Length: 433
Ligand code: HAM
Image (tube, rainbow, N blue to C red; front, side, top):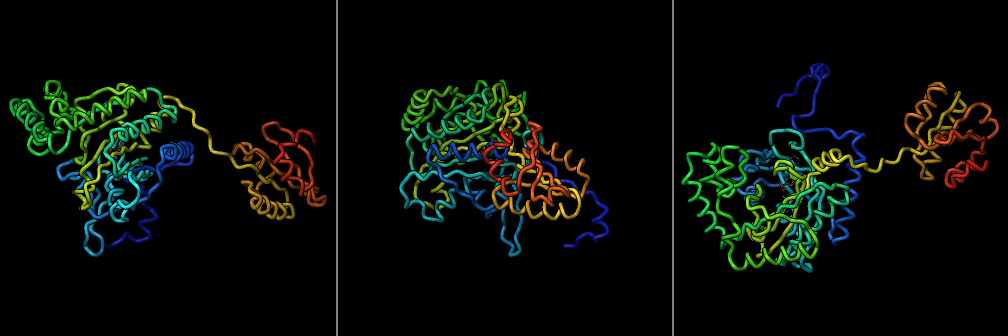
């Protein structure tokens, strides 16, 4: 590969690739808030964190997500490594977790194994608000048990997570897409129905009819909507086992008081699902705005070479959560501002301030300064940065072994001995001086 010369690099203004964004410090309060809630809610349900690599062998995703899915046919970031092996930046988190479950013999642990992750995900989609090419998911997987109570628990976790973030205008949509035993009959019925109306289908749906019939139900084109409304319903084709599983699940969701709505057209964009599928959307939203989605995938581990191992999970897009937090004007806790700004006047004071800054950091205070600016400029900056205290050191203070300690919000200031700073700040006792 040839690289541009350094001179050219210097003149070029680079931008982040399309659909890939920077997360700037001003946004970090949202990220910290969501990541902390993800960890604390996961812990409440007994999930442990797993981190899998950013990229995996391409075959893992092709065989799990499905060869005919949009993700595999159009959206993966795939490249050959230097040995010529095909690798793919993870386009979703479930397959890597299942690969790790098998690779580390987690089938020998007490089942189910409950894992959560916070991971960046890559899909070459058409970028728009809430749809990025690199985005982040919080996801949970319960592997090793088919009990519908675990589907209910997973849906409850996803729902409570959104609720504890402060989101309130949400809808929970639920469907069952059966298993490999009963789904073929449904697909055949669906195909028969759509074939009769093939001339009215959009171009993509004509392809789906042959390759990925289930996804016909998910078409967003206006032209296909009237047809889809009349299409056969999956739940009318469930085998007795799947029907029983689905009715138990609904019963458990009622016990948990979750306001789900049956949605016959909910099919999801990944092929590994069996039985339960669900999505959480903002009220009045569509699958394009889904903030969390998941379901059961009882055959995936076997497809990847393991023993038959039922599993259920979901993932939620962090950028979409942030969009919705902003839309609903949810206030998130601000990140703590640095405690102390050290302002100094003159070289001896600056040297003393440097030493004091190091000392205060060792004691656990976040300290900014000193800077080579006028005292006025340093004070203005301290104000703008929102620090709780400013420590001011001038010539007088150097001689006396004291500092001026200023509590910014109260505009209260006192002369205090250097060795008293820690006590006074910790006790918040400046007022009594
Ligand atoms: P998914 O529905 O493809 O499912 O993605 C989950 C969530 O990721 C979506 O509901 C959405 O919030 C977010 N998301 C998807 N695409 C984008 C995008 N281009 N930009 C921003 N956010 C996006 C899965 O990935 C499954 N692995 C979920 C799962 C886990 N199923 C079982 N276990």
